[in-house]
Image 1 (cartoon, rainbow, N blue to C red):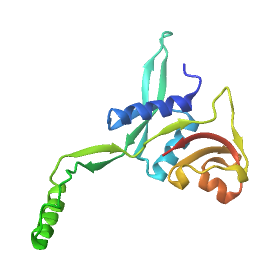
Image 2: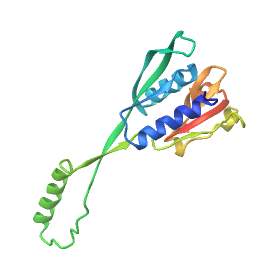
Image 3: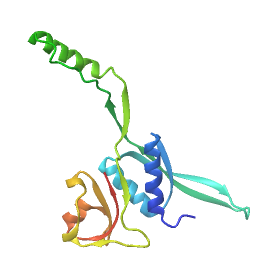
Length: 174
């Protein structure tokens, strides 16, 4: 049994993205479902779906296990080679060579790079961190997001700033 389901979810997503998995399965909780919805809405994952599995416990009772299957998102990063273009003196030949390099970029090997660069748990069960509306931080000057637990539900830092409410900072993602 896991005590901190949010950090378990973030660790599973982080590990799956490091090894370039297509999908990762996470135990269902309402909090994990809301965080998955936010990740999909912000464009960090492709999609998610709820799965129900039946399991047989030791007491011979059938129970339904609900799981969330998250499909991770990657973008293609092309391998580029740097050429010394100072050797070519003819301007026409130089422009033709540059156009040829642009054409070849698409045909070179591509590398899947995860959309999620970093996942970090901020408020932990042993040390809760709360902020009000004025103290809401920004992740990388607005590039990433903080996920907050507020009185209005689970929100991103932008939504909380817009609504003028604070709360507990659950995690940061960029």
